Length: 362
Image: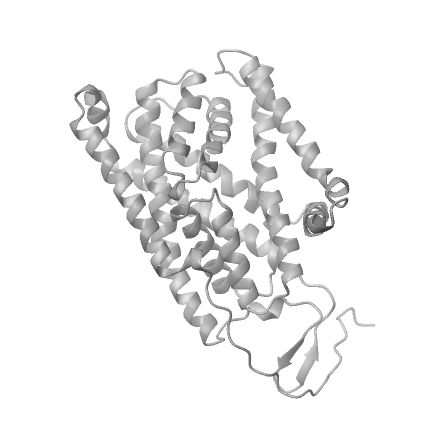
């Protein structure tokens, strides 16, 4: 017997056309332009401060000694991080979409995270709108969006736990104190246990049902040990950490020990929760401050983090904003394949009419 899924052929009346759901105000062209102007103004302020403030002479000297080849390599690593994001996005939401569509959605989300002010939630909200506009059911989108957020976040927290344990046990050197490894490790392990056990807790609240379903979905996807999801989630973060390390080399400074770089990076990223466009100032201050606590020279940390943040803001925006523009045109003309991911819905198959998809989507 064939293992292929059975299709029920149904010749149905053509669907009634409905008005397309407009792009949410948070992602309107005017809002994006305003956010870009704010980020641009903040960049000008930082550059002016570095150039004009007398006490920052050593910082200026460090920037003047930049090695372009290493900065180009750092940009390539950021491209690897972006590609990993697309990989895990495709693994979590649907492989039936073309790589083009998956890439356009993933890069649009990264661009939104670069220029908007909601600590990464902007990209997820934009992706949810795109998928809804493409024809997927709201409950499917909500469940998979929660799962996607948890999987990518758990990758960060897992590496924080591993890095903290390695520093606390001296498997990796670099932390001034064992406690600077032990405390993050305990905190990360607590978050992992809390996240994986959150399903039972949130089911007590009717309005949080989609959160419980999303947690269950994340656990189910992780149990499948899908390489695309596992390597994508890990690569999304590790390429980013590697880029930060290369930014130290680009200005002739020593790279912090691996354990310190990993733990300080993840803790410092919490500054992105501050509602500033692109996390500007929050992530930078969090990263620099955390690196200094772990014994990195303040000047070296500042130069590397500023360069790192410049690449982190520029590359996703330069790639993602055009991708969003193209995707919006494709959505308007229905020239996309997002609806192929809808479980249990009738789709047009050439030569067979409307056929019913299996009840699950992958």
